[in-house]
Amino acid sequence: MALFCTINLLGQSYFKDIGYVRNPDYGIWESINGIWWAFKAALLEELIFRGALLYLLIKRLGVNWACIISASAFGIYHWFSYQMFGSGLIPMAYVFLLTGAGGWMFAYAFAKTKSLYTPLGLHFGWIVISIVVFSAGPLGNSLFVPDGEGVDLGGWEQLSFFILQTLVVPGIVTWYLIKNTRKTKLEFPNPPE
Image (cartoon, rainbow, N blue to C red; front, top):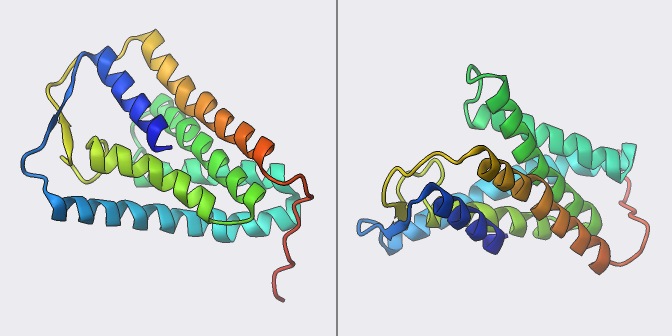
């Protein structure tokens, strides 16, 4: 996921005609704090959306419906965490689809591996690169910062990166999980009564 995120962000910067420069004010302690923040954020979201919610949904509805509901809840949650209300229908739909696709990927990883380690690793890999390395998140300027404003992505470029994040990356991860996990029926123990 770290590689996919790097390709995504560097690709966007190429088309925006900007580069990244090292932030001289960002040292080892800021890096450690940023990595710790990213880990806690990924862990919290994984415990909520994959650990509790998805586990119960798989038992009741099966893997596919459970993953769809978990992904939808994850997308809706990001409307709140990104403070999207009032920004319009199109930006809200964009965020829902973008984060919902990630939610599908994380949910399916949990369902196929029966472990929170895989979705946590995928989630953490993406956000640590975007937030701690490339300053694309709530922590502000991190290790590398854009060296200018650049230009807005055009329609085709923006669509290409949207497809990369919503179809290509989740598709590759889903394909990998199908090909490389045991072909056993997904059975989870019944929750305690």
